Amino acid sequence: DIVLTQSPGTLSLSPGERATLSCRVSQSISGNYLAWYHQKPGQAPRLLIYSASIRATGIPDRFSGSGSGTDFTLTITRLEPEDFAVYYCQHYGSSPPYTFGQGTKLEI
Amino acid sequence: QVQLQESGPGLVKPSQILSLTCTVSGGSISSGGYYWSWIRQYPGKGLEWIGYIYYSGNTFYNPSLKSRLSISVDTSKNQFSLKLSSVTAADTAVYFCAAWGVVNDAFEIWGQGTMVTVSS
Image (cartoon, rainbow over all chains, first blue to last red; front, side):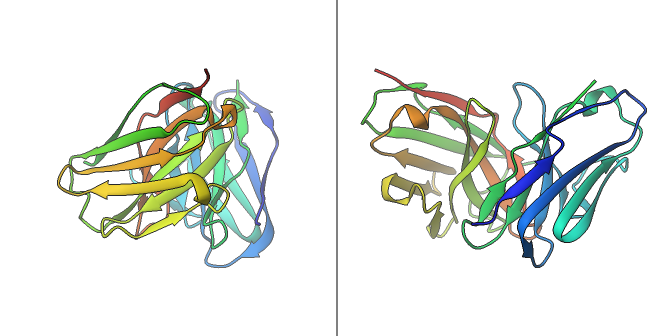
């Protein structure tokens, strides 16, 4: 089974700073079928990025995704207070079809 | 804009059946644009995909849950449902329904989630 490992587990930054979150996949994936979500307390996850680098509708351009193969990155430039949340990467594959990383907590 | 809302009991006894329904509003479940999915989140925050159903009735289940799982769709009510049998405390989680976009290959829309506790 494919395993997604996110790092760091917790990232402590201040508003206005730049955040770089990593997602490493245990096997090289084709098609860049990787998505990023964030989740605020008491809420459902929200889609940020799909196909590794495409911003979902309504997502500001301070969010960007990159990577291919086994290493993927979510970058948030100029952190806003509302960006502090837990971030998950997720892979779309064949067995199982959908796998999530364990999450990175972005805290102030 | 499509919205999802989960409903069902918040407490289930061990060995019984966990049943949840997701109501789709703002669009037709038969549109063909989504695979209708269930995802759960454990108290430790890990996310696990449970399975999905297409409006045609085709299903795909997480192999780890397949023997206990049934997902069905009722197009007349614009709803899809989850049944998980022989539950244990390990099935305690927040259960989300979500829509996987056929075009974008991601969980584009989520319900707010419902907490289900398995306890006697």
